[in-house]
Length: 118
Image 1: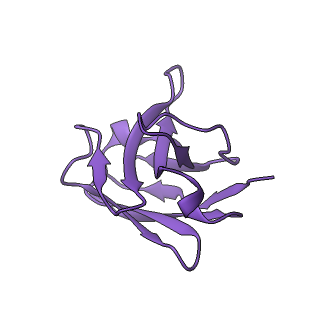
Image 2: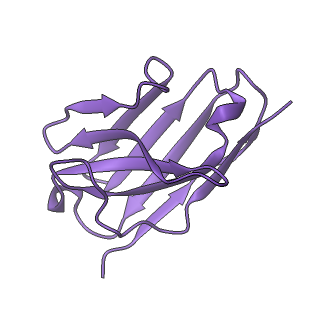
């Protein structure tokens, strides 16, 4: 059974930075892409960033220029470097495999909470 374990969240002030990690129990080449999603209170889960098996990256407009997704195939781990964080980035962040439309595969774990507040 595929499992994802997200970590690295926390409380940070506006303008601060965090690095999230996602460890997969299976090779990340299993999926077309690996992706980070987030869900804020009262809102639907949304795609934040994705990286394909070829290393092509995409980002939501709201995080372009501030977030960077990367992966370590050997460690089966995906990262999300977040900088210049804003209060509207507050959410639970999840990682998952993604299909060609960057839709989730449903293997996300418990998520990691990111709170941006002064």
